[in-house]
View: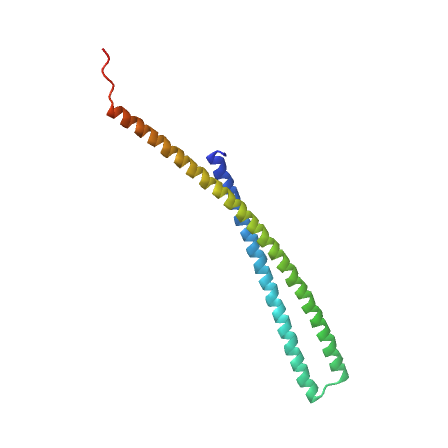
Length: 149
């Protein structure tokens, strides 16, 4: 069994690793959320632009204006596709960070479990030792030694 201070050191290091993994997970989740918000803004902007263009086409626009609209919509679609890729990649990174955090938490909990077992074992040993001492004391008290001549 590991020395208690060595085990405490392992638990402390595992806790630091878990904290760092949690920080990285938080950063990944935050980046994914920001990228998702940007994607939503792009999609909303595209939808608004399309509605505005339809209204303009109802009142009549030139061929040049229509071509500009199509070109700009194509660029918006490319930007949306690119942002979806960013969101997907950040989602994968967040999943990896979550898996890493779970692994560090599991490792930490394993050390904590070992520490708890060691503490319980030590407490049982101490209790048995105390009981043995109490039994010996009680036995001596019940049967005092006769004085030696």
